[in-house]
Length: 112
Image 1 (tube, rainbow, N blue to C red):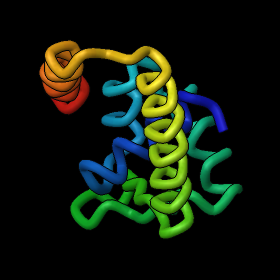
Image 2: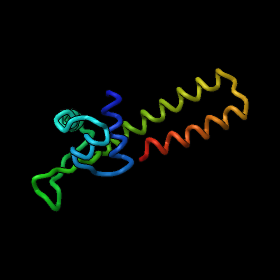
Image 3: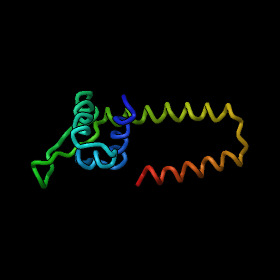
Image 4: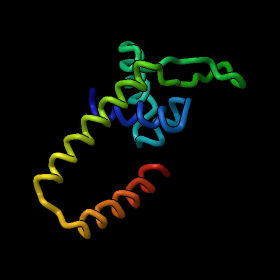
């Protein structure tokens, strides 16, 4: 799975269903590129498309249980890898506190 695909799944996991246009804008890609990505994710069983309740010409994209699970597994693996890397560097408590603060600030950037 590419980082771009994982980013789309993570967005759907955090923020719920979205249109392809909204996903494309968030990821800063064209709508046709996002459509191709959603097609691939749908083929793998990670997302489903549902007709928009207000405008039947639009579709909403939802993450499936399988998509949620792959995001959770990937986050867990990345967290474990990062923890191992940090443990090897022998940071002081003050340095670790700085990293935690920086992490919280970066989360704000990602969540916007």
